[in-house]
Image (cartoon, rainbow, N blue to C red; front, side, top):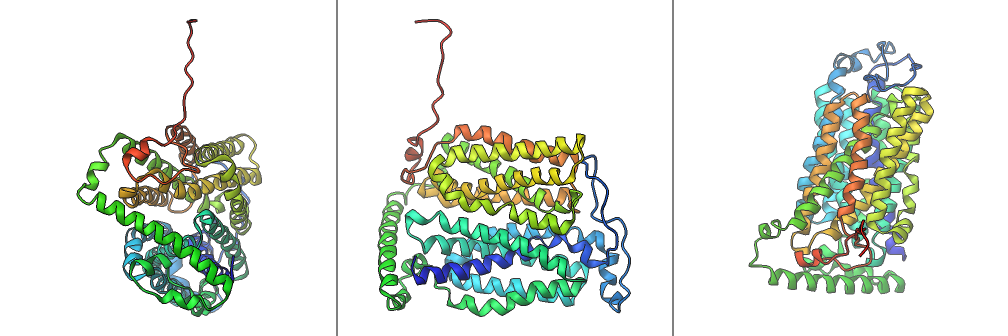
Length: 475
């Protein structure tokens, strides 16, 4: 990796790091809206909804008027998670289109500015309905930031190294989750908390202007601004030549395929049973993964453990995902997804059983976080797996539909449990969904090490799992 790539990845990791701050801010919002002097000492169980705190006392240090609206409307604030996930859905719909039209760098810088200044305004406007509107705007900008950072990281990497940027950026996001716990613990009150989240982001905004634009976007739009990076160093010039050569071959291949398929309707390809089956399986895995991942993430304060420690360990539990590329190279896509889905469901099921018979909050949380780690690994792999499962002519449409299922799962979880509580039915859903998804993976092909499919016929030729037939009677 040359100096240019290190510069790109460091700035992208900074942008993704700050998104974790506002992503899980709802975990602490009830504690920051009113002064909480009570600690949760009740053992955890899944028999009903569990609130982080039972009683609130009003602040008496001169900020009563500031927090009056928040304390009065704390039930309304509980819906911040639902409005945020709705913003994520909107961002996933419009983010890709805007980045294709205006470029990923412009969208990234704009959304980082919106993301940081929204947090700043929230500190000075502590009103419930403004908070809900700000959560929706933050969700839209956060989703666009993720789209741009992951795309730029992949496009600035050679084909054989493209699995590393998503893995590294996911690790940085988990570090942001841990730092959020420290910021929440060290700050007191609504204004101080949100200022601590907003000011570092604002100070880092000038760094994003030096991020180079997507080389693929510049190539497709016939812009030659990449030439200035050749003079930085011989190493950068050599890497840039390799990158442009690989992209030139890919662009020519795509243009040839578009000419060959210009008279074929995209709807024709969706009539294939192979495509429909893969869409259903990947859509279900996306829905189940979203329910499990966000259900546990937003409920860490309900496991009977201190909410700040719970949030820290929630981020720490995702750190092993940095080993993902090494595991993928050994196991392949299908086997890895099956294993992680099965382990995720098993972890959630064991946490349910432990809570019913042992009532050890730390063990319950540890098992649930193990399930979250496994399902997070599934999400990372499914992003790459989905690209390899669908033909070039309809790949973006299929990936978009799978992403839509994932975002719908986020909204369902937020609406079903707006206060972050974990019910018995929810935990059964978190455990059964991944286990069923692991079984459905048997009907998917292994795509590791084979070329991307260009047509439906290429998809049908991908290696499927062969079931051995046994005969009860000798021949």
